[in-house]
Amino acid sequence: MIFKVILNPTIGVFNKLTGLDINWISDPRYALICVAVLTAWLNSGINFLYFSAGLGNIDESIYERASVDGANSVQKFFRLTLPGLSPIIFYTLVVNIIQAFQSFGQVKILTQGGPGESTNLIVYSIYRDAFFNYKFGSAAAQSVILFLIIMALTLVMFKVEKKGVKY
Figure 1 (cartoon, rainbow, N blue to C red):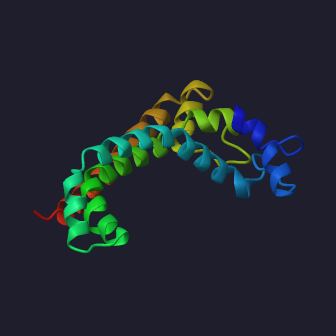
Figure 2 (figure 1 turned 30 degrees about the vertical axis):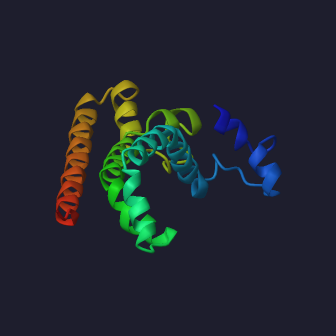
């Protein structure tokens, strides 16, 4: 609901700060972007916790050894930190893609699938078919398709991750 107020065309803080006059939620060009930004913002807190835990699990002594060997901060980041965080990066990528496909609350609150059909994501389409149009067969078929898409993406990501892992 806060995003709805922030993006309001007349009293919205975002338009006031940027000096723009855009109806972010009612314009088909911007509505899906607003839903994506809201989804990213909603996931940012848990992603921060994942990365904080991942950074806490990297041994400090490897940074000290790298400093003794003459590594600068950029080299430490790309050769020590990123490889140490690669399992966390992979996990958050998989989880965030799955959650992006399942963005329901954001669409329901911000746009109700509109304007037009610009934010009618598959989960919201399933909801409308099942509970408003009483097309339970269509909703069930869309649910199976959503499951297959998410499963295929997850399997592809696991395959890519397996190829990238070097021991």
